[in-house]
Image 1: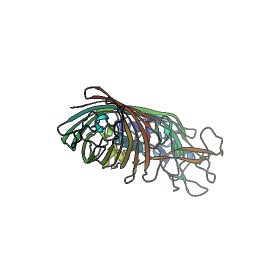
Image 2: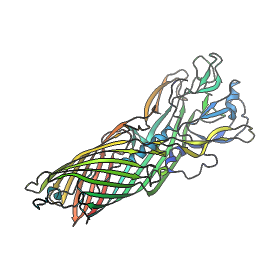
Image 3: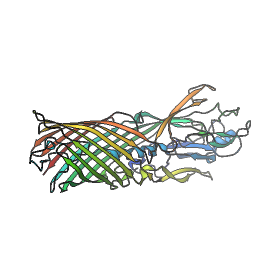
Image 4: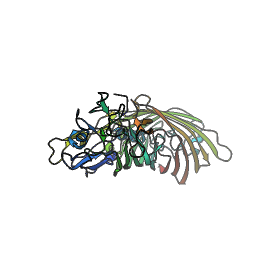
Length: 512
């Protein structure tokens, strides 16, 4: 069999469950479901007529060994279904990464007071309201509390640089069928095909943080997020790129080898289906432990660990479905205050997150089943509910951030950061890549023998690693007492993985 990536997508056919309410992670598969009518063709009447469940890139492949071409095409029970679920699995893995890497506002940013124990003088740290997307190395002080709330909206618009509003998916063909070419005496192979998906993927997160200073150098934080996830998908423009018809010339692909519908010469499908779903609930609870290991009037170094607990529903993209551990270090530096009250406070953070196995890191497929037509003694194998999802490791994420706060007096602070994530150094991530292949015939647009190129996304072999880079530009203002308001814009610089180009953040924090 020639090497081809099988991306004949998202095949899960509900038998008797087509109207069931899907989980958010099943929406893409649901959008490919349709009912196909089996009807007579130009050759002869099929053995049965009726409606069969089908999905866009379920390749109906002839499984008989020999016989008249017309009987091949007109007998629905002669067909087997070849399916994979690469796109849905890749989308789930990228959403899991997005959920676990969403930058969180530092839970100790706000109004804190530090004095030099030797002189009793106030230190520069007291002048800044702290960073936004990086850790503040200082702790808040023994017996002190900080409570904060932030809201973020993520509207993902592209995957690896390709717009989600028109993803082209490629099935490379090349699977062996049961039809033997009488000239070459070899089994005919399935033809390539493409289809399009229009996706709308959104996440929003409202997170409440509470921090308590256990000692003067160690504090503990807990974050409880409420997540809303929503996915809408439309599958359309299915085209099978086949040979010159039913002849068996040398090198031809008989265009009855694979179709979208058993019993018909169905090589195109302008509209396949649509599905959408949204869910709201508690996300993955975050525990943060941080302690300072070096503290001077103008520099503070801290180490800590984030622990993410799998309290969110992974099947609805409310959580990652596994425990994650992220050790990190944070460095905060402070200039001496200038005469006009300006303080520069460069900061740096680096951490490495490792996660366990999750359904969002595995593959998604239906349970093997069958469908039959009235009066037809045999049945067609299909994929039915419930969905079966294997588990696999979520990718590790090495994250870093470098930036600076600029305190403009005691009431205003501007923060600028550059953030990076290297995803999948140890445990890679499933992803897709663009591929282009020649096709001899593009039904129905090109004449027989014309050459065309078909392109679309295919699954990569194995797993891969990639980097993401963003910038954060924020402002913090002390409204009243120790109450601080936060405004920030997270701007994505490159297109690797699932991308939300612009993400606003709004927040309030109070120290007491």
